[in-house]
Length: 311
Image (cartoon, rainbow, N blue to C red):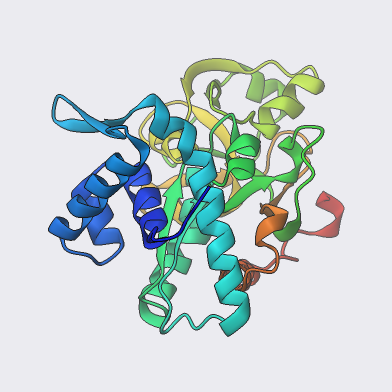
């Protein structure tokens, strides 16, 4: 393909347009005026002989051509950023980058929320786009739809061979409403089986706590199901329900939610949250900087805070 006379800045504009499906948001993302972004879309439509984005009601949706271009464009932009960041380094105070991180709502609360607050002060030019974990997380990482992925290593599927960095451990605890008289200082496995239970099911990832209960032949009295880790404590407040949740999450909400936090009724293995990325980003200095920032934030949680006997 002859690229003579082709403005390669249009590649960045195309990536923003396909990601945002909005001329206004794409312009804001690149710090451009809306007329300039509209002009870029016009040039792209002429180049590809395709409208790329078409109006459907009040929103713009990508055409089949745009959908097919998406992965190629994201890879090309990532490669371009890697080339130039390697040649001149990366200064988070000067260079602007946008990163997409896929993580559960639990990880977003305990790890990413304080990171975002810190970077807002220390590196305000950087933009983090946090998206929920999807079933096709591996494919999205391969295609460049997400830059970084935070997952428990215990749920990783076979064949998932990406670079990784250990972040932190967490363990499970039993929670109940502070006024739940059916729950004492300790709960036996037999008592647990009789208590109404809130289960995390139907989400993109299995609950390792519930999987361990199944493996032990422990039957919960499931009364409520949810696909959100953060919703579980809220469903326990003011109800007779109990649930098994991450200890860090329990302590984040225990005071204002008035929860009892107890040891689980049987030994459960902890989880180990890790950071994953595609090998093409390993040498990208901006990407490496963000990985270091996430690891630094995880270290503040205390990576060694789980007793060795629980591992």
